[in-house]
Image (tube, rainbow, N blue to C red):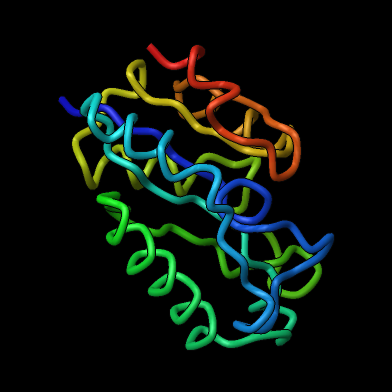
Length: 161
């Protein structure tokens, strides 16, 4: 079985704007996390992203724009020797599409990652800037780590064994 660190997106790997990042031009990767993510990868952790993207349901941006943002992260990280194994995202919003199993705090995206990559949830972590991230992690049987918005991940590296 494999191990992984799941990452929330906005406020963890890219700059939080206070609401949805709707335009590619506003998408800014946080460079202070390169070394930490590389270290986690070197320790044998797969790196996966799990992010609520309710702005899709609201019509504020498109799947093409979201893909462009994620492709940008992938390319930028590769320049630093970092591989994101997969981006999971929930396109739903309860006010627009009703309830779903993937929108955090529900664990659907994490459970899909566990299945897709044959992960042992006891060896996995989910780093996020909201309590809903920690709740999703716990519901999936993994350890949740809450950080402050845009906090450098090296400040919580000691929590990951």
